[in-house]
Amino acid sequence: MTRIRHPLPDADWPSRDAARAGRWFQPIRLNQITARTRTWVPAMVPWRATEDGLVSDDVLDWYGRFAAGKPGVLVVEATGIRDVPSGPLLRIGHPRFLPGLQRLVARVRDASEGETRLFIQIIDFLAVRRRPEPAKFFGRFLQITDRHRAACGSEDEVSCRARLGAMSDDELRAALTEREYRDLAFGYREEVRDTHLPHIAELPRVLPELFADAAERARAAGFDGVELHFAHAYTMAGFLSRRNDRQDGYGGTRERRLRLPLEVLARCRAAVGSDFCLGLRLLGDEVIHGGSRIDDAVYYATELARAGADFVSVSKGGKFEDAKQPAIGSAVYPYTGPSGLECMPTVFSDAEGPFGRNVHLAAAIRRGIHAVGLATPVVTSGGICTFAQAESILARGDADLVGAARQTLADPDWFRKVELGRGAEVRRCIFTNYCEGLDQKHKQVTCQLWDRAFEPEFAGPRSADGKRRLIAPPWDPDADESVGSGRTAP
Image (tube, rainbow, N blue to C red; front, side, top):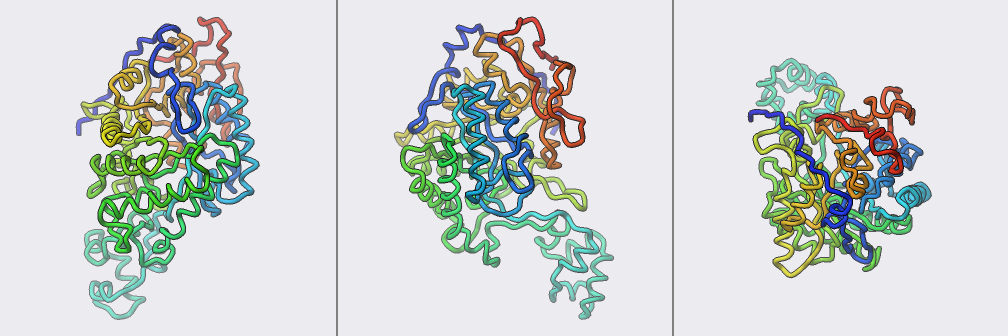
């Protein structure tokens, strides 16, 4: 692929009256709640929770800052449903997490003056380990089999391990199974089809209750809704993948791959009731070899809508299977390969470019849902950074809500600025994925634009190393429009 650096789309910002008359700033019903506008902030993981998964002051500041921009819907980061260590990632797998989550809800209500609807995205994930030192892999982790003995020409386990450790890469590819070589080159990673592992085999029995308990806690905490995460490299996406060949009734055909997601949705609905917003995020295309495609996604979304999902948020890619090889001692990261670039395309792209690149997936899913007589709202996102983009998407009927993660990270007030007719003051994302690079290293996520000299008098909290601002500089809508605009050139 020839890489082209694409300029940012022209932004012919609307007047206040034109913005407020536009489709993007019209209300929409989501179950029993109404979002004031059709603006949506997708879940972003900022790595600001405590090591125990609790809400920290930094978490409160992060979501409070986004809420000040008054988006229609703000989705809280991927939040673990199990009560297991997962680093500074929010968790909801035990009642002890409730007080912090209640404080988070209160902060968003206060900062948005009650104008933003708050959802929480809940996830399950399987084990992923760091790429091992070869000596450690061959000396401790690899289980020696007859295949290895034959390749080494030795029955002695000690000498066999030593011989394997001295092999070239080509020799190792022949001596090891495909899975063993992957564990060596990329690190150990569990998959939903590893039914030889008891805890993987029992996922269909365990997960519906875990998700339901988490959804019930979300309602108790005061959230307006829950987004079930059925996308990217997480467990539920693994069940939906065409690569899922489980033989226990939960893999193989489309119907069987969808069985567990339907059971999770049904159990969650029973737990939270019919009047609570319960939607989901899924992939329009896995991108990877042998993965699910848009025809699968249309089927999944349609059946999940029939089963009572209140919205479908559409994404693309972000898989482990095609990720770049990590350095020794690092874990594989699912947004580094072709599927990851499709999930979060940058200004360095092919001829199609990164802006609104994946809208066609949401459009196909929405058509499929409408074709069976349903009107379940569909959310699209990915390279959205102007009012004109959002308006054209809604005018064509490609989606019902339009989200923006990276542009909202760059300027949490941008929805509000556009709605007030002050789009010229929007701090525009430059789509280089500086933020994604920090996420890959599990560092506190920030935007490189926050540290440029827009408002140098703003100190604000700093990252652990003291080098980066942890929240965007403030914006005062009552200030002179010509002062402190925070504009930047593409």
